[in-house]
Amino acid sequence: MTTESLVTEPLYRQTPYQADFEATVLAVDETGIVLDRSLFYPMGGGQPGDAGTLTMEDGTHLAIHDTRRDTSGTVRHLAADGVTLPKIGDRLRGTINWSLRHQRMRVHTALHLLSVVIPAPVTGGSIGDNQGRLDFDLPEATIDRESVTHELNKLITADYPVTTEWITDEELDARPELIKTMSVKPPRTGGSVRLVRIGDIDLQPCGGTHVASTSEIGPMRVRKIEKKSRHNRRVSIILEE
Ligand SMILES: [Zn+2]
Image 1 (cartoon, rainbow, N blue to C red):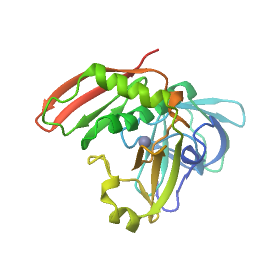
Image 2: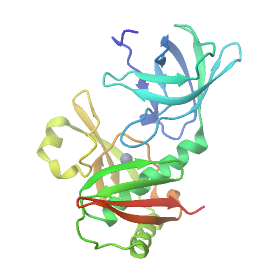
Image 3: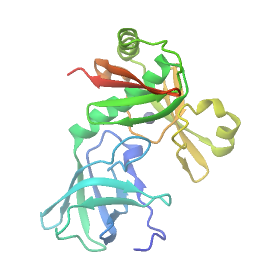
Image 4: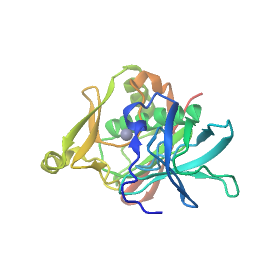
């Protein structure tokens, strides 16, 4: 499969609350199905790739179990082995697994808040279905489960709006303090970088999907705090319900 000009329009970035979309197949092979546009979030920035269904014009369904993206902007939808794949030029309807995605949006946004509650450099992180974690460069044991849970839920219920904006690569280079997560490269696209703003409390580069306001996260609690190494204190959080 040539990756030349196989750029997928990232609908997941523009309309994260939409679950259905129509698209045309640009390429197909064992590495995945490439569409001209997609709501399926491709794995990145600690957030897993979306799952869902592609529905062909004849009504047959194709299950997608994961989504990946390469540096050139090609999004690949991964189907199970042995299924009948669509052909280049086919029109189809995509539907993401919304309940899974929405849980990940809630957890992802909560991790931004966690980085506000714990103002230490972030060295890693990941998002599961109803839980997530961040690793902090925090050598001393200055945090405890109860107080972090309390502060996190205070920010959630304060209902801060979550919005996005774009700056140029040069502007980001001039403001390195915006980069909190040292392990994840800022998502640079065609000379600009997407920033996610949470009210007046957080602003950082991020290419993931988020809820529109923090109260939508719902109650969360710190599940555990583990010291993994001198420069790695792991804080795991989980949705309460
Ligand atoms: Zn984010």
